[in-house]
Image 1: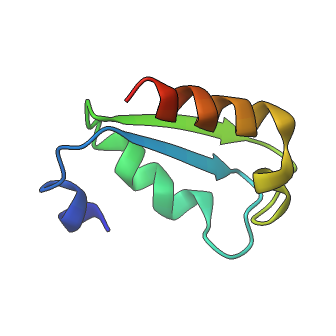
Image 2 (image 1 turned 30 degrees about the vertical axis):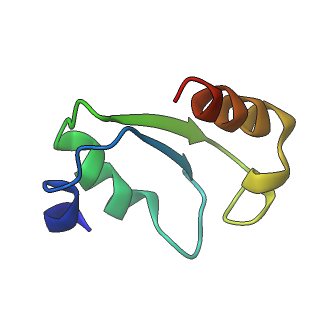
Amino acid sequence: MRRALKNIKASILWVHDEEDDITPWADALKVKEDNHSNIKFVLTKGLGHRKIYHDESIKKQVTDFIEKR
């Protein structure tokens, strides 16, 4: 993933939960630490891998992000 992101210039909204048991935050943290200017990270806690998509705050952030494009 990290290598691929070096070639992507599009704006990205990366939503991730610290307690995701499928895609560990430790893996995504490496991408965040690369400090890509085109990636906005939204970090949650306690939503895991599946509940994150049903959270009203996350839905609003995704909608707002899309509307700005």
